Length: 578
Ligand code: PEP
Ligand code: MG
Image (cartoon, rainbow, N blue to C red; front, side, top):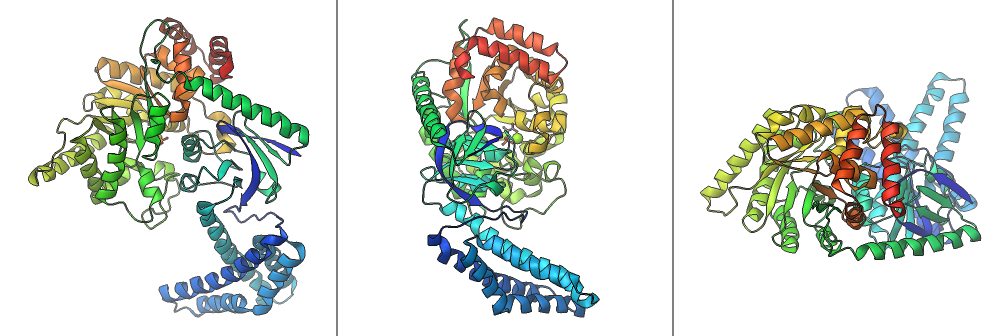
């Protein structure tokens, strides 16, 4: 039995056999296969060689190779890839040791490379570099194909991987993927956010979990405590079966709050909305007693489809949501691609600092056709529903003015063809950069509402990558710098008399719910699954008490002090939430 501690990102307990996905960085662990998997593994070796050969041919065609040394390199690679004895050697190793294809490829080619490197002939020893390249070429084929396999999992399992992209996570079929564990990641990474949306228990930042877990090993994911147990003993298994039942009972109890208002003990109503990535989640918001959609992350439409969505694709997705929500509000955020949400085609160039790069609204403003297509679809649904439009990652007033101007252009186009829409549609922005927070009073004059995206706001304020487990302890909603910016934004919104909500992950953390209410926030938008728990927190407090807590928190000078203080307060109010 091995116990690993990481960051809990999606609550719940799951117990199932491991399906291990290989890492992109090509550090290939020795992993065993079952005798029944042998044929599949040998086929993977053959396919990897065939695909690597085709890829090399394509590459040769696409490059105008005039230089003879480049031609030579391609020729060497091709010779190796066509060498039957090399393929046989790898297959024999898979058969003999019952190991995954990746490991056999890696071991075999590294052996050859070090043999070449030891020969005292410059020409031959330099060929070692080519062998490493060939290893990479083959591993890429094997790893890409196993990544695609993630989309087609058809047996119950726990996915264990180095990392998972939000797109891969979004493709999980909940019936089969019971939970996941990754080496990397942070609490507010989009992979974690999608896990919560799908209700899949998950733990991230487990360092080497993908190397130490064998395919088929029994794994427990404890998404409440941030623990993963590999090959649990009988006693641990029995203990976890009890935890599982306790958790299910607690969820059931919380569901009884469905029809009750999200009102504090001193009678202040808090509007509880849901964040969604897929239209299907609109049902969960209603089931859990939420009042509307506070954030629809429409970029998942792009991430899930192989080609760019058409206006009709957008329209149909939005229609599904608004039909379910009837007259309730639905805030559609225009696409927020980039950073960790990238589509797998040529749209996005590789950037050194994608989080600071051409992402989100910046990308839309430079890709007018794509932007207008989405805006047209949003406007069309506005004719029949209570939708609002929200621009992400606004970092200066000019960006907002430009986005509004494009929206007006689209309205004029629709007028020309007499297509109905709501000309008074509310326009809001996400306040998620320090520059927007600091100029909130200027931005507030040009829009109808703010939604504070604390996931990004914290990342940019503290200069801490939200998805990087190595700096996860530096990432905190309770840092005095973050508290001050939040206070400013709330103040500026209220002065300008515009609506304000918080839609980052902190809005679903009980201790931070107290803080936000105390700072004057009256609308929270959170993962639908968290609505009952947050409603319970709201119903257990008074605004006066929250005001006191916020005032004291703002006077403290370290994030640890603030976190401990808020946690203690929350435990007193609602011990069962911890
Ligand atoms: C945020 O940044 O807080 C937010 C809600 O948007 P996303 O998590 O999609 O970046
Ligand atoms: Mg954001």
